[in-house]
Image (cartoon, rainbow, N blue to C red; front, side):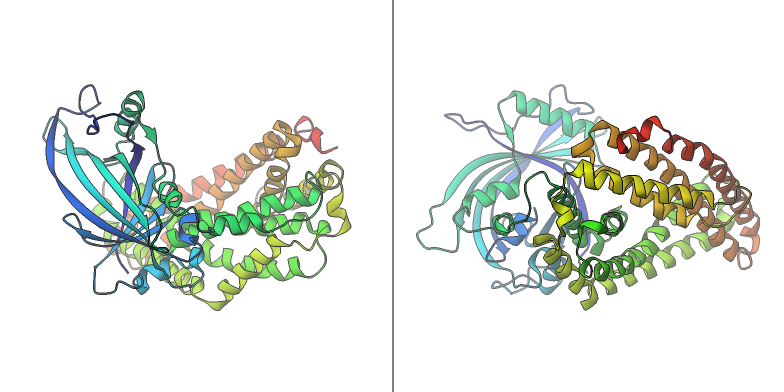
Length: 502
């Protein structure tokens, strides 16, 4: 698979002026000692998408770059805030459609449809580099004069604009913010590149417009409306993480698993507003997906945990190779299992079923009732189920707290769904249950880490002593988490915090 790259960038539309100027830089920017010219060049890009622009609707893009700049195929995927992920692929000879490797990464948006050329973009770019006191590049400022033309119609007009882009090196968020502030003060306006390109193609119905055209049911503001909106958001979140999970982006597997768990929780708690059948068929499939993703999440979280502790050990070198190899093997195996699941027809059938369910939810008459009268009592029931589960916990035991996690997950997700209806009261309760979940997750991660370390001791040779120390540390952490569990539960169970459920 092509190697992904994480970029930290922002793009701005240059202010309208009689004589366009290059993006300003230098001056009082933090950590910048000098500026140097990095040259100019021209580039040609052909953007590929489905006929209804499904990639653009998802905030992604696939482009084929030629010209004087970097040549090749680029898949850009949205990340958090100004971060985005780039996956590059060799240019090759194909021009009618995107490479199979990139099309596979865009399955969640394109649903396997062929990506064809939809837009031609030409740009003249001038770049400068910002240097620190030691002469290292800390950011790149690019000025582009862009002309874009749709390829769907010979009569389609071209559009032109000037843009400024800043890309910082080594995660310098403070520098990114400083440049952004300076540009905004100069009259530039931050721009979403994908949105900008979509304006050029605004005569084509986009996937998003098509989705917005899909009708819901029920009166605005009824229980069905509230539940459907949250389900749709959760399905969107799950699908947005699909390509990021495939490239093994940081925290992507955790986010996708969280979306699957949230969907399962919502279908469980609010089952009375759905007709029998469809929801029950979805839940086992969501549990399967969450389970596969959970194995990868655990391998990632536990691996980072034990390796961070290892760095604090004076004799880390003696156990380092054994532990690092074990962590790498576990993560690689879990990621392979995730990729196999995402390429499985079972997953694709689940996605299709989820979208059908959200588009036309199989609501009962209960969905037409007021959320406060129908949904809030269901949140109260979820809390009572959490209370019953917590009462079964042996305070002096060391068993898994997974049943508490599952019950708390349902109560939290149910309360979050009611925030638009019940406001801060529901939000405060959800925060308290999140605190309980944090304690439970810490306990479970400590148990998993201890189990991993124990399994490695026999073959660690001289490193067994260090692994033993790390194992003891995780046992202490698990005990502390179990001790903290009671306080976290009493906070979440507070009467004042639950008053809104009555």
